[in-house]
Image (cartoon, rainbow, N blue to C red):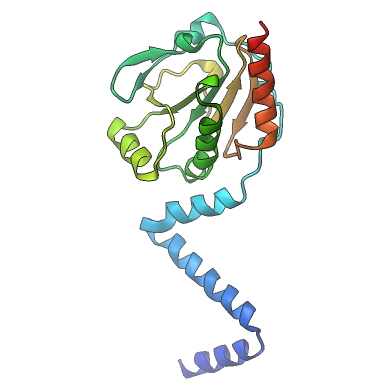
Length: 205
């Protein structure tokens, strides 16, 4: 034990105060990640700091939602059933997420800001397969006002993904303009320009 302490003293004598502080913060971070109770929050915070806007189009971009897809139904938090057809003709931001998912938690503030900016100009649809009470508790605890729904698992093939979060931007004419697997910074200028363009197209129809 004495030998270990002597080595540590020699090691830190050669380091600056700034380096020592960074070392301490690193060790604290490792400890917090190891502890189950703080792991999700720490990982999601780190992820949030490093979020970037979605990079652009992918193979699903341009695909059209069918009439059958629009019949997909899910439940509001009060238990009332609603289907996607109710939102037909609108700009839709669709996001699949879960309260236990660190990347989902990381991008949630940026989605909330998107909701605050656009309000009823677009339809924001967050879909979870968890217990409604679990979701409600999470939203209330974090002060989120996002429109959130519960799915029974029967998601249309066009929206299925093996990972969460997965998000879609859908145009008023039912085309997938953007699909993003993984967390992203959604209140970015790039995304807002895309949404503004779709809103303008809708208003000029």
